[in-house]
Length: 309
Image 1 (spheres, helix red, strand yellow):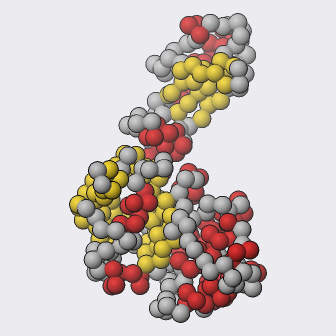
Image 2 (cartoon, one colour):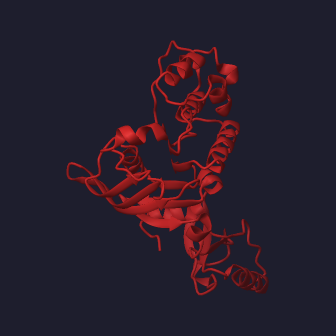
Image 3 (cartoon, helix red, strand yellow):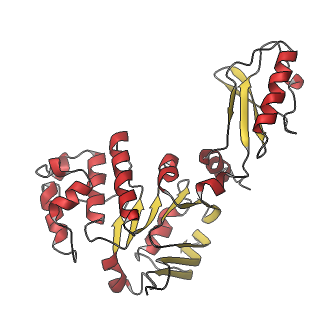
């Protein structure tokens, strides 16, 4: 059990009737690694997590968590897992402290109550009834409960939804500390910045398949850079230059015609130099000129549109 990677997935398929929500994905997550699953709604992220958590069996393929089938061997695996679902229910009239105490009663080796509350930044809310918590505070309580048993593997499904920026950053610090302590984490999130800050590796899912995977740098590499500007009023679109071998893609933003160029890896600086020489030669001022490297958002959107390399 200890010689295997904490998470091993090979050819996982999961169906709901005739609909295949997960269509043959494979990945591994090492000890003390955070792996982020990204994708649009319906991409298969939560279904994948539910299978890893042991709530549902795989219809095909192999799934192992801590060397065991998480569904068939759930009694052996579950004590070592921390699970933060997208939505969790609390007893509305219990206080935050009473809720933690309730969970401690059936969590082997549970942290002390105050330690759990401090992890989620909720010590000041200990006497507040859970129905009085904000959405973000309820998510932080979810996190405290997921960490209560010092899990070897932690599943976080949209953990910072509803949090304000300060609480989100504090949660990131907590998650980073947990990973630094050796816990393996699988995270789903719609916040790309969250994945960029936290993930050692990530995968972007689309229609039940992993389309792109690797570190953030590996995922972004090869997707090119971007130059854009507002087309001057007196200029015809046909007169725009070709930059780095690419023609301009034209769109309209707030009533202005915008030219955008996708530039291949390593070509941003030469293309920008070429553009500025062209603009000087035509006595043009390029309003709204932007030149930037490719981002995780660019790759995500291309994947969602079915255009990923």
